[in-house]
Structures are given as structure tokens and as C-alpha cells.
Length: 258
Image (cartoon, rainbow, N blue to C red; front, side):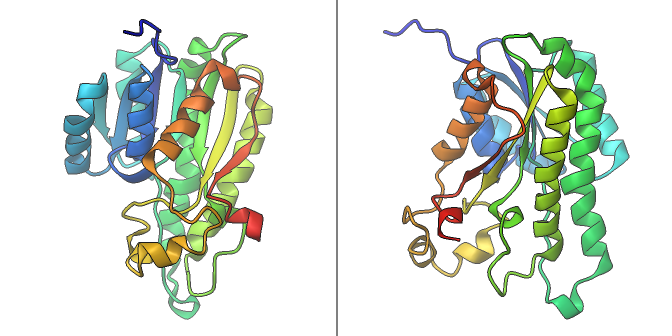
């Protein structure tokens, strides 16, 4: 029987959008690695279901908040400041998408998507900076890990009319780099750029047939939960302490094929 201490034992992490999809994959990985995790989402039902499912793996708490609003950011930040004196990792994963033909794409789609995907990332990082700096050490700085997208690194295929989403994720990548330069050496800031993973956001794509879609990916499959958990644990653990400002594709080789 192994007595090895889990790699993230004693660490506290926050995962926004942690009630489902990629956020839940990240949360599972962090819990299995020994971290205490707070998850946040607008939807209380998703949060409850996630806590019920994941609590056997470790200590997980839920906070309902709309991080596309100043009030939601204040709610989550206030909750954490009341309960924790240090925060080792912030995963800015909450996101919104919108699809519509160019001629019909509404102004409201820009407001909704950019408010959550970009402004919310900046505002929550700003609000939690004192807790992050309190957890930071020279050998193991605190972490901010933003969820970007391969759609922020290349133009989506024709017909995927997610104009505000892809623009927002390109903005997340640049914000990641600027925050990394600004917050070094106290806080490391990196981004994960997922390819195709199963989630509510990708349900429409996968409804066309998972095997057919996977056949176009060099590794011939969509992402698995362990793929996302693995990169999340790596970026939170001491072995990644010399990486900051990186945007890391986790895409099965999609970007490699142009």
C-alpha cells in the first residue's frame, strides 16, 4: 500500500465553471491529487450534482455566482476571503458561447461572451490576487490557469459562426501573457487551449457523430477527462514552477495540421 503524499496535498484551488464539462474534469483531477477545491457556476443544480459526485474524492465546496457581472465576482471573492487565508491556484474556466450567422449575429452576443470570457477572467484574478500572493513561495509560486481554446489560436472552420467566442479566447491568450509578465515572479499565469472535449458547449458538434469528428483529429479521438485533469494537475504542481505565459494546446494535434 502506497504512503506517498498526493502531489497537491495542502493546496487550495478554485475552478470557475466547475459544475460540468471541462471544469468538472479539472476539479476531479485536482481532488484526486489531494487539493481542496471550490467550484463556482451560475447554475446551482449543476454545482450540487458535481459536489455529490466528486465529494468522495476529496474536499469540494460550491459557490453560486455569475462571473460575467461585478456582483458575481464580488460574491465568489468574498466567500473565499471569509474561509481561506491563501489560494494556491485559480482556474478561470467559466465561459459562454454564441453561434449565429454573420448577418444575424447580435450585439448582445458580444456583451455576454466578452463579459464572462475576458472581463470576468481579469476581474476575478484581480479580486483574488491578495490570496494568491499569500500562498506564493519562491520555489512554488501561486498559479492562475485560464481556459482558452484552439479556436483562439486558429480561425474556426467555415460554418462555425462563433465570432465573439473565438475572439474572446484569443483575448484570453493575450491577457494570459500580459498577466504573466506583470505578476512574475509571485504568480505564474498560463492558459490551456482545449480542442474537442465532451461538454454542453460542444454537444452540437458531437451530435454530427463522434467517430466522424474524431477521424479528422490526428490522434483519432476527442479529448478524455484524464487529458484535461493531467494538464491541470501539472500546471498546479511544483514541477511546472518554471513555466509562465504559456498557452498550451490540448487538442490531439489539431493545430499541428493547420
